Length: 311
Image (tube, rainbow, N blue to C red):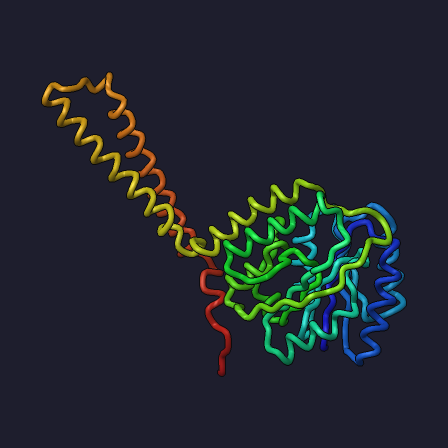
């Protein structure tokens, strides 16, 4: 199969028939063998009924329904697990992503050799205060911290080699950082394509301002995991060792001053500071040690090492 299109959705019953018609037209015009995996993230409208109708009318369509709203990351992760196409395309269900972009995204993966291609909504029709300005700041920060030269990390329109989506796990709200996760997993050929962004025709946006706060917390998590996830002792152990040594040296100095009669231990703030550093250093070192034990026994510790194998 050439293409799997994964569509996560939440309360998009009005958009789905138009999206399906548009996808079918583009796929048939270019002669692609394709499937469409629609993941209903606990919608409370008629979205699932519409999906059932689409699946009944066209065997290329597959539907997955969640018991409740788990979030876009969970929907994408499940959709990735079901996809069988050589190239996996993700797009939102609100008609703001154009299926007309799919053929060129497919070509960039198959012919240009990219592991993944991320869309760039260079011209946006969102509210500047609610989305545009915060998104630019968010993308700038992610670009600087990750080293990945993308303008729009959170664009829903992306293309992947099948190996990529089968090698990564998207959870929490990490869908914003799939390029970072892919790079972390060893897929470094990441491209970008300017894509059309359309005004929303039906419904309202499902994302609030809290996504920007959560986004930066998730960024801190993903950057820590990418650098120290396999070697937590390199982070906790280093900081713990430095704190312990500073505390120990301060303790020795305080004891020497006490023996010389210059200070009283109970009245010296430096005695308590030295004890604090020693205790914190010990705790951090033990945290790194326990983290190493967990990693050493993880069944997925070396899951990304092998790229190809000839038996």
